[in-house]
Amino acid sequence: MQKLLVLTLFVSQVAFANISCYERLTEGYGDSAHYSQHSSDVYSNSAETLDPQMAYNAVTKTLNDLGCSEKVELTEVQCTEALNTTLCRLDMKFGYFLILKDYVDTVNILFNRWD
Image (tube, rainbow, N blue to C red; front, side, top):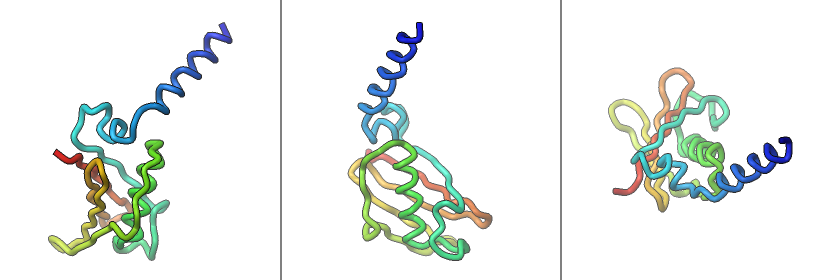
């Protein structure tokens, strides 16, 4: 029984490792978007405002949390002011991330696939 349990865990880990980053971001191709949140673990400054480094940190953490080996570059982050807040965007081959920090302590990350 113990051998069966170990074998089951091994097979599930191998299956998970073979799931692409795109599949993880779209939950098996079923969704066109993925939403995640982070807080102080992605801050790059006094945490008052979103900047390119904080946006990059948030996307990198999201990809790492999903087990993705895809790399993004800080130079690819574009930030702008819109509706009285800072909004950042980071494009990658699967789609793009929109990053927004709320007025408390949460950085919100929304991935949208290219359609």
